[in-house]
Image 1: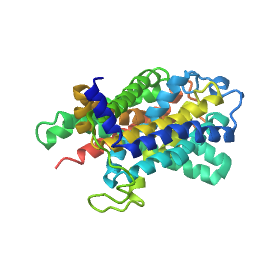
Image 2: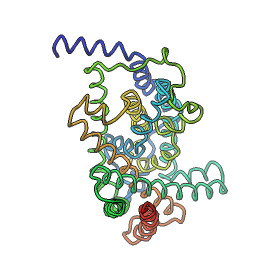
Image 3: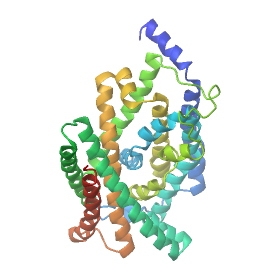
Image 4: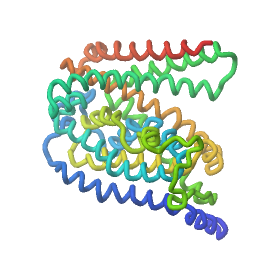
Length: 384
């Protein structure tokens, strides 16, 4: 780095003190508060579901780094990118919500969702609710979780298909809908395969790659902001509602940046990795750590302002490619696990073993069938 570049870097750093402080708090929160949460739960050396049950499909031991990467992509979706960018409309006060929401709410929520599943044979969140809150709540959560997961999976099928079409948009509305349907079918076919196959065959192989891309994208944007000398408004100078339409901070900002702090969807995803952990002592890194990482990514995007503009200015063509990959891949890597979780909710509900191909097909076909009907209906409904 030349002297001129070093001066620009240092000058940029002094324009984003509150951002750096929040970043430091997130990292410190993982080590300090995260360790306190971990000690409170008290992980021990008991046999985990991955070792005890190990069916070669949903229950199996995966390396810790893969557990972390898969968990990060499971919970991410578009939250840490679009949610954070939308939250930036309220100004730098969004940094506080992302930072403290992640440390004290989101990461704690994800940790206990995952660890309670580990302690209860890898059970889905609906079954865990029944264990601690009774049969009535278990049935409520069974229905709610299944409906939620189908809706999330469908949205994360239609969304990426639409984004792909938007990138190469041409022709009238009918042509756009036809192309959207084509890509929707492609996405749903992938979802079926990912939902049906054992977790190490598809998810275990491509998620780490996408996870690395997501992290590189965020780090690249952060470094680019420093090296290009962009200024980020400080919290203490702009501690007010900066939304251009005057939309109230409470509770609109908290809902908009939900995945940057806390999300009930995460509770349906954490049991997937709870079934693949070799030791309870991996929980701090896998569950708490993945949520803190999402918080860091959300903080960076909130500071950056606009994904494509910032990427093009700070990382060039590579940044644009990574941004597009993130925008399309992130919802896909949450959509497939949403359908997978829906299958497992039904399997736990009706006590259907999932080791045999026949049993998995019996649940995969209706689960993806409902998603396909809803997705195709959504696309056709856009025809003028």
